[in-house]
Amino acid sequence: MTQWIGWLRRLDHGVPTAMVSVLASEGSAPRGAGTRMLVTADGQEGTIGGGTLEYRAVDQARAILDHPPGTWRVQDYPLGPLLGQCCGGRVRLLVERLDPAALGWLHDAEPGRMLATTFGADAVVRQVFDRETATRQSARGERPEPGARIVEPVGERPRPVYLFGAGHVGQAIARHLTGLPLQLAWFDTRPEQGHIDGVTVVAEEDIADCVAGAPADAAVLILTHDHPLDYHLTLAALGRAEPVAFTGLIGSSTKIARFRSRLTSDGIGPEALARLTAPIGVPGVSGKEPDVIAIAVCAQLLQLRGT
Image (cartoon, rainbow, N blue to C red; front, side, top):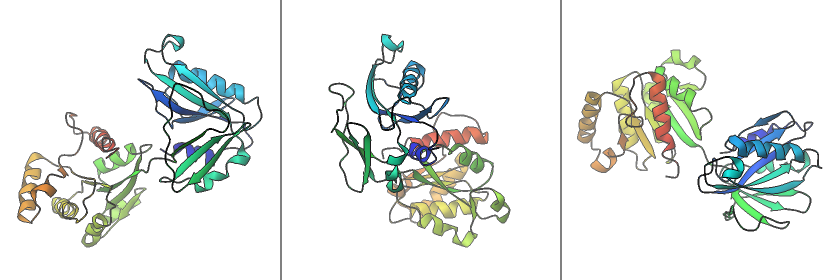
């Protein structure tokens, strides 16, 4: 995720700040490589997993604030008796005093690009490239020395979520997407829903074009106020020449059975029909409250990561 990039872009250059980065982890570690947090003398943004590990890392970060900008050190932590943690893993951290004058690379830092970090004698130097091969770091062995270079993605590209319907469940889903690696595009046909922040009102005769324009990695969630409209959108999603990553439909078993039968009659083949997830939400989560449904749906979308 690119949240830490946002933190750096909003950095108060007048406040000494350190950044803690997880360079590598193994075994049962709280967070993986690429996780970061910012630390000042009296606060922090983000977390590397909490507990004693984070407490020690914050101490190290605050100690480095007394050193010149650019100063860095690498710390290894076995997550066992030494830290009073029973995870049994191992974490390697980079702790650095940020130099505001060396953050020009942020202008080019966008998801899909690659970030190269070179360890200099007096500072960490970062550059952004379009094409670089990522390097996997180890939590054991030799620590990075001056001259070492690591390459990682700038950040995970958020999965587009095309949400159709701004009723109670749609609003709950939109609320719970905040902070997740998911990018919301939200549509409704009712003009009165246009006052809701984030909702785009689209004429009913045009709304299927929104489905047609969704990128292939999008998740399409269909939960409008109107069954015929739901069907129209479901047919559009499953009938695309290039399938989307996920098509989810809300509804009762009766509604879903009727839709499946009609979709077959309208030429949707078995392979395309198998791509329909209905009802939406992680199986086994009971409850019809909007927030319960929303959390189950968000969890289901997170299961798509890596696919």
